[in-house]
Length: 284
Image (tube, rainbow, N blue to C red; front, side):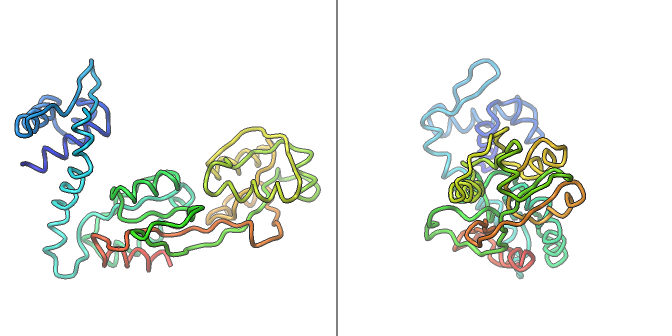
């Protein structure tokens, strides 16, 4: 069985159509279709249900997909296994938005200098989504907000940053955090996000119920709205907040309990242990 064919099947499932998968794979749609048909003939059952331009996985396809992903990943690791130093191959790194612009650039520079044959693939996403991808074996490591529950024993977390809560306000706002939250619209850090729960708890502990303007799980966007005078926001002091220092106020809040922890999470038995350690060292 050709692992290239499995890779094409996975691309169809992930993209939702043969045409989109073909663009991802730099192939023609006919070539991708022929690969899937070859797999169907070899396995003896249908893998895709086609309707117009869309292609959906059958139940049988969904059942074999986790193993197919592992086979494709294991095949990709063969080249790195052949290297004596274990510093070659693709390292799949998930990162939340603030890590993409704040922590990751310098770490990637260090990583690629130390391991020139390493090819980092960066996957953006929310903490919850990236955690699920880690569990599914689709990432080697992820920079996320520490989950609000105990991680499974198959994953390990290393603390990278502790980010205390601050209040972002328009540049000419007057008064303390509680006063501003009572008088100005509240640009709320989505309370369903792992990082947003700290702001929700601080408000509850202070007995404050500000008038919510909107919910966002994008801290840079909250800072931009505050700078434009749209309202105030409770956010963690992320790496990179300093870029907004001239545009909005950042008022500190009391209490170490109201901070989010950024962690590097990875498998306890990584596929590329030396590169995973290099990434950890670079971020530390």
